[in-house]
Length: 95
Image (cartoon, rainbow, N blue to C red; front, side, top):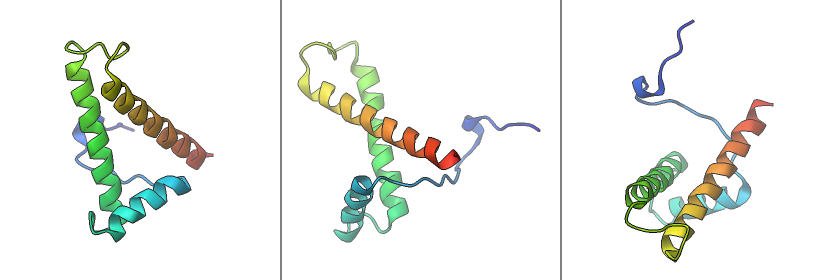
Protein backbone atom coordinates (compact mmCIF):
# COMPACT_ATOMS: atom_id res chain seq x y z
CA UNK A 1 0.00 0.00 0.00
CA UNK A 2 1.49 3.33 -1.05
CA UNK A 3 1.23 6.21 1.40
CA UNK A 4 0.78 9.66 -0.10
CA UNK A 5 3.22 12.33 0.92
CA UNK A 6 1.50 15.23 2.71
CA UNK A 7 2.90 17.51 -0.01
CA UNK A 8 0.86 15.61 -2.61
CA UNK A 9 -2.46 15.95 -0.77
CA UNK A 10 -4.42 19.08 -1.66
CA UNK A 11 -6.89 18.63 1.19
CA UNK A 12 -7.58 16.02 3.82
CA UNK A 13 -10.54 15.60 6.13
CA UNK A 14 -9.66 15.22 9.80
CA UNK A 15 -12.13 14.53 12.56
CA UNK A 16 -11.19 15.63 16.07
CA UNK A 17 -13.06 16.59 19.20
CA UNK A 18 -12.34 20.11 20.35
CA UNK A 19 -12.03 20.99 24.01
CA UNK A 20 -15.00 23.05 25.17
CA UNK A 21 -13.08 26.31 25.50
CA UNK A 22 -11.83 26.07 21.92
CA UNK A 23 -15.27 25.13 20.60
CA UNK A 24 -16.88 28.11 22.36
CA UNK A 25 -14.16 30.45 21.09
CA UNK A 26 -14.64 29.27 17.49
CA UNK A 27 -18.45 29.29 17.85
CA UNK A 28 -18.31 32.94 18.94
CA UNK A 29 -16.41 33.73 15.73
CA UNK A 30 -19.13 32.04 13.66
CA UNK A 31 -21.93 33.72 15.62
CA UNK A 32 -20.31 37.15 15.19
CA UNK A 33 -20.12 36.62 11.42
CA UNK A 34 -16.33 36.42 11.22
CA UNK A 35 -16.70 32.95 9.66
CA UNK A 36 -19.65 31.36 7.89
CA UNK A 37 -19.42 27.99 9.69
CA UNK A 38 -17.37 25.99 12.19
CA UNK A 39 -15.24 24.30 9.53
CA UNK A 40 -14.22 27.69 8.14
CA UNK A 41 -13.42 28.98 11.62
CA UNK A 42 -11.13 26.02 12.33
CA UNK A 43 -9.39 26.40 8.97
CA UNK A 44 -9.09 30.17 9.35
CA UNK A 45 -7.65 30.09 12.84
CA UNK A 46 -5.22 27.25 12.03
CA UNK A 47 -4.09 29.20 8.98
CA UNK A 48 -3.48 32.28 11.16
CA UNK A 49 -1.51 30.16 13.64
CA UNK A 50 0.57 28.67 10.83
CA UNK A 51 1.27 32.12 9.40
CA UNK A 52 2.38 33.37 12.81
CA UNK A 53 4.62 30.34 13.24
CA UNK A 54 6.18 30.84 9.80
CA UNK A 55 6.78 34.51 10.58
CA UNK A 56 8.40 33.52 13.87
CA UNK A 57 10.70 31.09 12.09
CA UNK A 58 11.74 33.74 9.56
CA UNK A 59 12.28 36.37 12.25
CA UNK A 60 14.34 34.16 14.53
CA UNK A 61 17.50 35.68 13.14
CA UNK A 62 16.15 39.21 13.80
CA UNK A 63 14.91 38.71 17.35
CA UNK A 64 16.19 36.87 20.35
CA UNK A 65 12.93 34.99 20.96
CA UNK A 66 14.14 33.38 24.18
CA UNK A 67 15.41 36.73 25.44
CA UNK A 68 13.53 39.96 25.65
CA UNK A 69 10.93 39.95 22.85
CA UNK A 70 7.67 39.56 24.85
CA UNK A 71 5.23 39.61 21.90
CA UNK A 72 7.15 36.95 19.96
CA UNK A 73 7.42 34.82 23.10
CA UNK A 74 3.69 35.19 23.82
CA UNK A 75 2.75 34.19 20.24
CA UNK A 76 5.12 31.22 20.35
CA UNK A 77 3.66 30.03 23.64
CA UNK A 78 0.10 30.29 22.27
CA UNK A 79 0.97 28.39 19.09
CA UNK A 80 2.66 25.66 21.13
CA UNK A 81 -0.34 25.46 23.45
CA UNK A 82 -2.80 25.07 20.55
CA UNK A 83 -0.51 22.51 18.89
CA UNK A 84 -0.32 20.42 22.09
CA UNK A 85 -4.11 20.58 22.59
CA UNK A 86 -4.78 19.45 19.03
CA UNK A 87 -2.24 16.63 19.29
CA UNK A 88 -3.84 15.48 22.55
CA UNK A 89 -7.28 15.49 20.91
CA UNK A 90 -6.01 13.52 17.92
CA UNK A 91 -4.38 10.94 20.23
CA UNK A 92 -7.57 10.60 22.26
CA UNK A 93 -9.58 10.13 19.07
CA UNK A 94 -7.38 7.20 18.01
CA UNK A 95 -7.99 5.23 21.20
